Image (cartoon, rainbow, N blue to C red; front, side, top):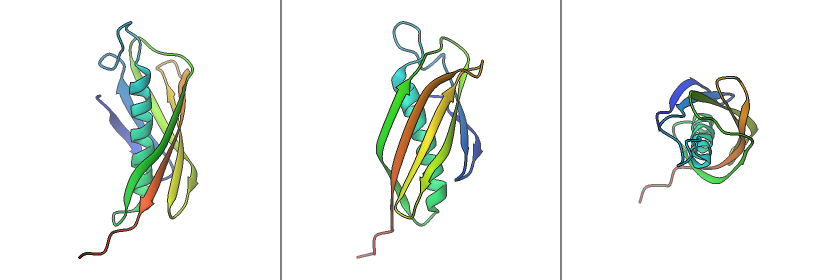
Length: 118
């Protein structure tokens, strides 16, 4: 998908993705590609929040597509809505090169404690 992480912390994760290799048959940025990007950046932010000893699994992703793009690069920014000890939820906004909002998504992850050995 060509995703590049530009900034990464539990408070804010920013990544880019090219439109060109992520289009549907009409030449528009695929909605599934935007949903995948949103889930990826929300999950990465949750992983950073959870820390190295815990595992993060996605449990919910929803995306509203406002418009699409035909070229350029899109930028996804994940900001926390809730960062708890068991659940982390991020709002992910995807914008085009002209700073127009293409997609608003919400990504929720479950944070799992390590399983005891044996």
